[in-house]
Image (cartoon, rainbow, N blue to C red; front, side, top):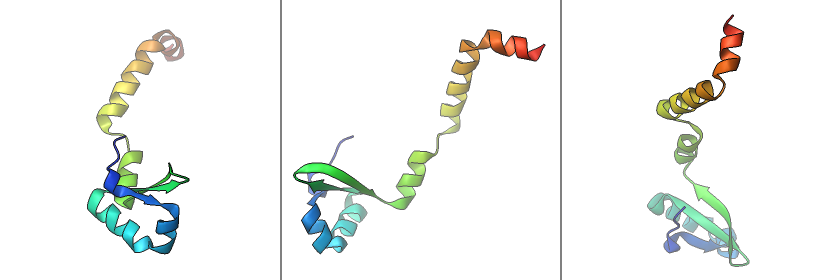
Length: 80
């Protein structure tokens, strides 16, 4: 994951000025909150989080084909 350095915020600053964090998310798509100068939290738009959780139909189809090929013998036994 590439992180825009403009979207980095210290935890202290995020605590004191959350509206700045919200603006960064609106502008950059995400904000990274640092704790002890280490990335600790990722803030993203809710709609983006939903997109990340949903697999595309193509992904599901590719996984299904791979599993069927890998377990073909078991499926043939079950089909009898």
